[in-house]
Image: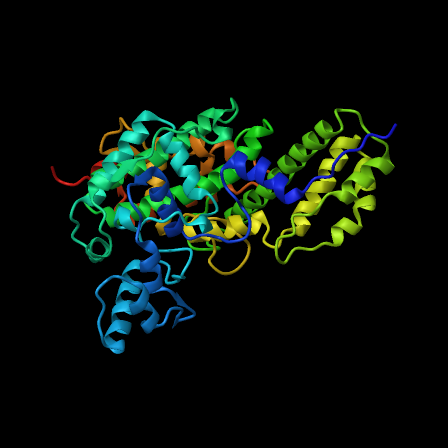
Length: 483
């Protein structure tokens, strides 16, 4: 008797088994860190009353350099006192847009305001869940809730910058209107034994960034670091969690520190380590699909005809720009995989091929785009994509290699070892770099570490001594405001 198995809707499956599991959605849009920060602040706070962001969005909404909401409509819909002259109102709107739009692209919805005040935070869904991931990493621990409370207190203090002054004028929120969100569960992957240590390291990093805002002397600078950190942690989850779940351990992420192409051997090795993530991601996705198909058939492998009928019935992801041709070739794709694998594994690889082909914006492209936004992937233009340490990422890297008990500075050697053990990020000679299939020459690894030392020192994040020793400065001490 033939067992009837309902085919998969791959978009729903992806949402339940990938997006919900990782707490990121690596498809479609590629958010700027400002979007991630906005969602994070909105997620970790609870507001009594309504935010007035809808009116603020109408006031500042632009598209392709043109106002999406006319001046007359603004006056009819917005309760703020506005200039009566159209010319004055247009100048005012441009001035506000320049102050509040960190990425120069504000639309009616979603919002992309530079967060300098809790009242401007919005649950912006274009962040691809990166803000949600950071919020759950922090709110799953009691000291994280306390750190968020200190952050909120700090953002309600009067600040000496135009962002905060304008923000305070445009929102009527008071500190008594804002509560910290309660404790919540961590991301699903964080509770698994293979990922627990990595999750703790990510949570500690986000927590240090939150505390930097609460205790730093310049909240705008600290908020920028927090935004970059939240984005980078999401990229690390994409890069490391699939590998950890398949029990392959953390992958080596070899990062280029000098000018693009300055060290050609290291450039090629870094690009190879970037490409290796694609295989790890696809292998994990195929394994999860194989397990799903096995469960649907209750572990009893069907014949080839029945399996092919099931596979043809599965609906593709169907993201704009994706190809549908793979579905037509499912029988031959499945037959190819079936030559070397048992039915459920072959089905998993076949469906993974369908998912990848039907996505207009591939997860790999999403990773590269978001990585460029936060300074982790480069070059900005050109080929090949590889891991880089741009200036915007340096404060986050410094925090990633620090611990709560550290003094004002730690040796660069110890700091580098922590980056490797915690996140798999490597700059110089190390055993993990020598296990990479595409190895960089040892002299180039040495030179790359020296270039990183120079870069950190040039932006005031490290001290170099005449004997060749470099100390990385602890941002928690370096940026702490006076008591």
